[in-house]
Image (cartoon, rainbow over all chains, first blue to last red; front, side, top):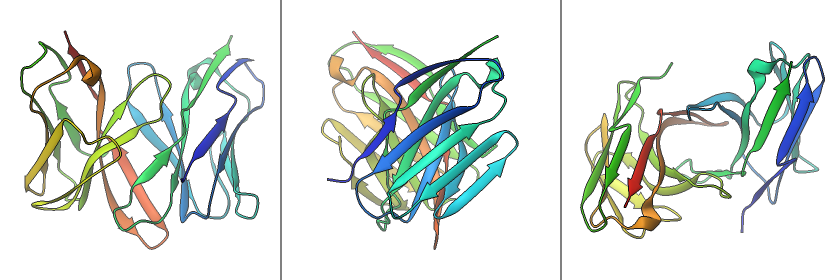
Length: 110
Length: 114
């Protein structure tokens, strides 16, 4: 069964800290997505990557295909980064379906 | 922001009543999905559509039906709502690319079945 595991489940940080959220998947994928869900529910796509590393502002996403592992890093964290971060694996089915992790709830304290 | 709207955004209904949630897109994306989100679970696929009148079941399709008569609209129907269908429902759209798909989500519909 294709699965996606995230860690940690919950994370509390002080403003300014460097944050890492991890995601592992069970078999080969065509792409890995990182999503952000704010209180109130809206889900926004942050990154889609199939190899290497992508950066957008203070957010960095990396993927190691051999180890079946991806990380999302937040540099100089801020309270507005508080949200649930979700990784999702695209196993390449023709329908484009994704398998989602359960999410990491991040709280950044001022 | 991708043009996706869900309606209604919030609904309380009684057990046994039919409920229809609507997803409307202005992006002309081929693929549309309905997910449900529950505590302790990741987003789970209910049904998806890969074109007008082309739909298929997802992981948790029991008790749900869908229809897509136009590219822009994807309807999710609970024929006879049960308390286990209390959840947050998200519509999503995507177009597939060789390297994967970029996916966009609606704002969610909160459904409570009492």
